[in-house]
Length: 268
Image (tube, one colour):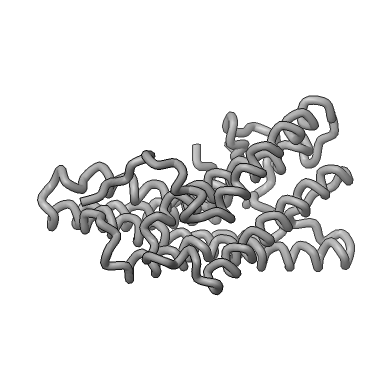
């Protein structure tokens, strides 16, 4: 049986050249954005204006390289399928459009998300919401393909963890993201001060929907991690049961933090 191993890094390029190349490009582009963060003192809503583009770059690099790694478990020949190639190129376009929008807004000294100040910004915001949903759909498409692949070589529990983790990422993310998009911001309530959690920037005073959004988008990491820990170490039925419980727990955690934020309560 095959396990999740970081060996054969060349497989990133053979199995997912578009995702791998885009992840490398975004990684290299972090440097100028980080430099802008240090040199540009402007802020937007109490936060350094280049911090959002930097966070999104890092998040998208992690997302893309994760997909590129899991692509080795897709059906044989799928990497050469023209429809799959067209789909991955469309996902890459959506990613680049998102970064151009977020980075462009920062350069112009304004916000990207929830910016409906003019008809143009409002239209762009709606279009970028579609692009965000589309690029996240790559995880679901891969979940279905891996599920249908009988020759992954993975232990049953490990394969199940990949399918559930990748498959849950899209619906969980869309529920939270669409709720945020329907409002005027990610906060539920009006903070008196700017007390935030370090690094993540989540509010410590009012509800913050970004917490649930963060948890939702990382289902494709947490559930496979549990699968990797239990596969081959527990009897197969117990291992698969542990994976299912982990997936259910991640769903519960997502909706618990989602409900907490909607009630206007901070995560801490």
